[in-house]
Amino acid sequence: MRHSTIGRAAFIAAVTLGLAGLAGAEARAQTYKLMTGPQGGVWVPLGGTMKAMFEKAVPGVTIQTLPGAGIANVKGVQEGKADFGFGNSISTVDAVNGRPPFGEKTANVCQVANLYPQFFQVVVLADSKIDKIEDMKGKSIAVQTKGNTAEAISADILKAHGLSYDAMGKVNFMASYNDAAALLKDGHAQVFTLGTTIPASSVMDLATARDVKLIPITDKGLADMKKINAGYNKVIVPAGTYPKQDKDVPVIGYSTHFITSCKLPEDKVYAVTKAMATHVADMAAVNKAMAKLTPKEMAQDIGVPLHPGAAKYYREVGALK
Image: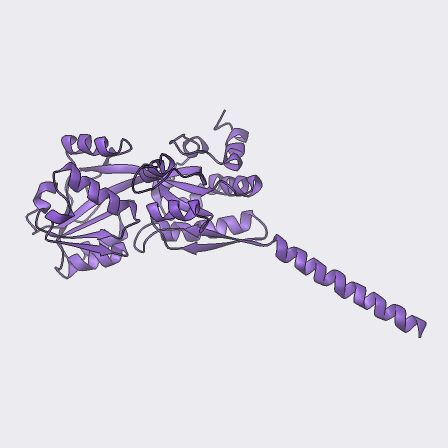
């Protein structure tokens, strides 16, 4: 009887310890949310690559990827609805300073890394008789939904050229680049705007069905854009990027970067930053623009506070003093 009692006690103790261990492991497990971008852009596949990288680099962490957009991602991190996200330098700096479309200064959005340049592209049907931004007046255009940086830039570029949405024949607010491109395919719109890398898959797909061309930004147009947001700059879409594009096209440029909640533990963000810096080739497999990304470029100050975890890694590798 005594041995039986001891056996039962040992069994109960073992079960209790086992349950406690499971509870402890469960408590240590953490799911983080990463906001990406609209379908048809590079942020969705890049987010998938980062999910795999982060889950391998940070034991016990699961990454849940969610659709998003530049402005929406900043708001999501600020409001605690997301832990990580892709951002655009121009709109995130607006958020830090409390400028529209943000109602107040953000206090919970920290910088992790700069990633690559973005190209704001104004794509038109070749037979639309649109050769400059001013020619868009009265046309049907397809832009992204509110909360997308490319939509905000669309409004800015119209404003810089004396136009507005009211001057358009019709404005279609689309949830994805693919949906916007489909409108041009079907002839329901003549203009499609997007902000992403080059070549954009949605534009390439459109170009298989219809002849298209890019509308260039002029020096005056750029100067007027910079009056709206000093973060705008000029980048070049090289000739041959898209079918039948026989010359370089200057367009509005800005930077994509990676943001996080300032409340996240230093060790977690340190591990995430290190994973990105040591797996550039994996990210470049999705976006060639990142092929030569260095820790020094990742650490460049763009006016968004750097998370202590990211700063620790950059100091360790000599990218930050």
